[in-house]
Length: 231
Image 1: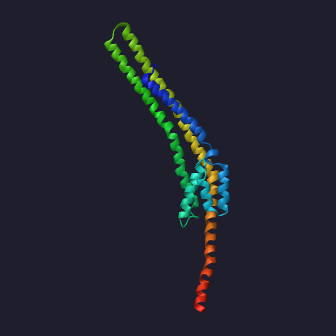
Image 2 (image 1 turned 90 degrees about the vertical axis):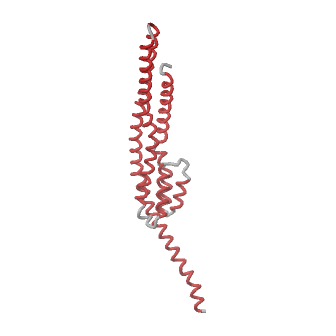
Image 3 (image 1 turned 60 degrees about the vertical axis):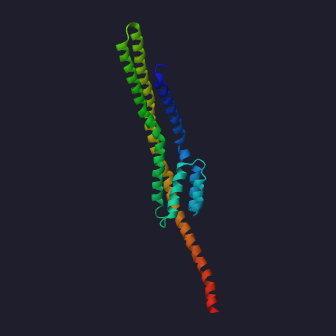
């Protein structure tokens, strides 16, 4: 209670900081961002030329993982482009950058709290100092000492509470920022780069298969026309 209303607000912010730290610890794991079973299924289907089946596997991913989002976006771009097989790697890289920025936005809440905490503590300090000076100017004797001590306590408690919010939030923000960069780099090297090659090969195989089907269908379409002319 020594911190006043701002003290309760800062306590609430500290609880939010703890919740965000726990959320990030659970969410920013490689096993969730790039599930091994999904990576294996995508590689198998892309190597077999089953590009649409790979896209469906991304859509059916229950965890809505980083890997699924990157590959789904890359597959959509490549299948819509006549040069899809040639730009598979670029599509995967650009999709990875977009999804990596979303991961960093998950961490922005800690950065905001790290900045807001000291400001609220400073606000409490200013309020406490204003109250202290008012007590000095308007009260006498024991009443002045009591009010002066109360407002000085308010100022110092709010300052301490603001720092208690800001310091852990700042450290957590920096650590999670490094963790995101490290995990995304590892996924890009170990998972996305091979899948980009598989996507390129799968698109090329699908294009060859489509060309073969069109070539096989062409004689069947021209044969009746030739018989008609002979008659």
